[in-house]
Image (cartoon, rainbow, N blue to C red; front, side):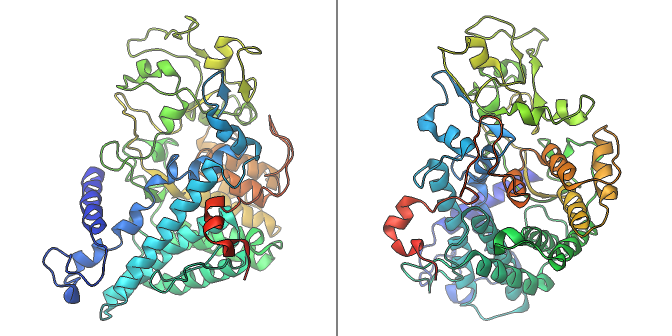
Length: 499
């Protein structure tokens, strides 16, 4: 089913990419004044808006990379002459980025491209005589645009807030982050009645709307610049309840949401539908696997031997935690015939030591084996036999377990008890249930469960721990948001001004 869906996306994206002016007859012989003439054509209009999610999981869009590498979970170590890359991976991990770093630049660009695409489609639909179905479609795209704005605001703070492409000023001013928060809350809340209460992983449904509202209220203190009130924690809890009451259940297999064929996972609420051939852009395995891991997975391409789990994060898992071995790759590595793989340079057994010695490893200070073969690798997303350069696993943007843990956090912050929402996740992982879970315990559990799903940066900021010193990173200040790229402020100096 996924491959058929992706094929449809590619065809429709190609179709809409050719449409550049609203006054031209570009709709396959359908006059512009009667397009869309049926519900199928109307449903196809948002496809290009959803397709803007495609670059978010890799270095074209940098969202996932920035959320994880700036946190305490994953790093991009320098391995001798490899992975120095002008310092971009070390900068992201140590919070020493500038307004001209690759991650800062690309994330801003792709988020704004997504927002602008949504605005263009909304502008187009508003030129058509309104019907109830048309109104519903506009509401859907507005909530998708709100999701993109939520990511933009979360990462960059105060930004312009534009709801039309046609009427956008040439050089917009920023508005305060708190004002954007208020606008997003109002937009999503007002549009919720129009969203469909169905389980569609690639579509903004009512449950995606509830999930976005829960995220906004849980992080309201960050976005408003003042601590959350009990009323906001209660609203976060309310919208978590609405998600939890939806058509989703915890998988008995904790790896099921990350399998290659995970498009029907009962835990996934909203996802990016990656496919190795038709919807590329998820190459996490290439970035993390050792050079010789192609022998383990019968890959036609050689991985790049880069990303590793920080040793401190790896050590947060108890020895009997199923996730420790399920989410990570370490220890002796064997090929498809069961033979121990030999590292090509050291000619030693490929026995991956999960404890990376340093963020920067140089030939003068580290052995070749340390440089090439240390640091547990990311194994959370299934790597099938014969995997190519791009994964076909869907990437979960919203997953049910997150909302169990968010519900628990909201309860604890209101003076309640969140154990009943945390313990099903812990018990599934094979570790003991907790009694009287604290916020510090909850944050650690969120790290273990939601590792490498793009939540950790936001979580650490909400808990006031993002700028603290940790393994190979000194304490920092003023790094809770990324700077607006220099190329953008050079083109529009108004981006340096709040208005």
